[in-house]
Each structure stands twice: as C-alpha cells, then as structure tokens.
Image (cartoon, rainbow, N blue to C red; front, side, top):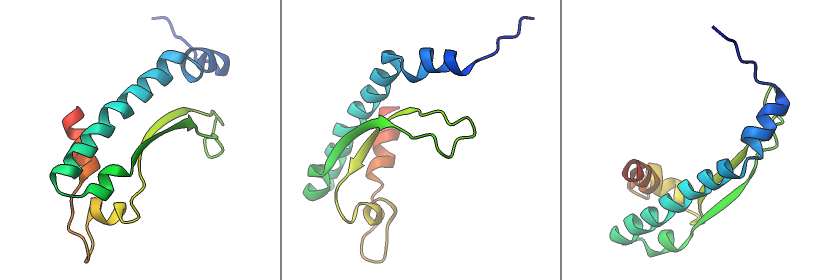
Length: 106
C-alpha cells in the first residue's frame, strides 16, 4: 500500500486556490439562495426573501492548527430577525427557511 502525504504546498495548489473548488462552492450557494427566497415568499415573508444574498471569500485560518485559509461561499440573510425566524422565538414561530432549502437542494 502506497502512502500519500499531503503537503501544505499541494493543498494550496490543488484545493485552496483551485478555481474549480471556488466555482463549486459558489454554485452550491447560488443553487440554495433562490430556494430560500421561494420558500420565504411562499410563507409570506417578503422582507426575508428580499434580504437573501451570497457572500464568498477566504477564511483567515487563524484558529486552524495548520493556519490554512480556506475558501467559502455563504447564503446570508440580511433580515434583522432572521435567526429568530429560522429557529423560533417567543415573537416568531420556527420557520427553518435555510434548513428546508438545504434539504431540498440535496
């Protein structure tokens, strides 16, 4: 059995700066965002649906033991009550827009 050791240089070249990785992350976020909007509109929450956006970037890697800065793409909700609507509170029922969108997207 051959053992393959992953070096920091290999990881940087093949994963962290690889355009295919960042395109795949961005594509997943772009696939989830309209589903979140559709679910929110179906539930009658126009403000939540209009506040959906996508943010891409690189994590700083400060907390990582290897200090590797990894790329990411996120679906961000700008609604000020987004957390309460997602998980529920005494003022908002639990809607789970993001959870349902991720489950639907697969």
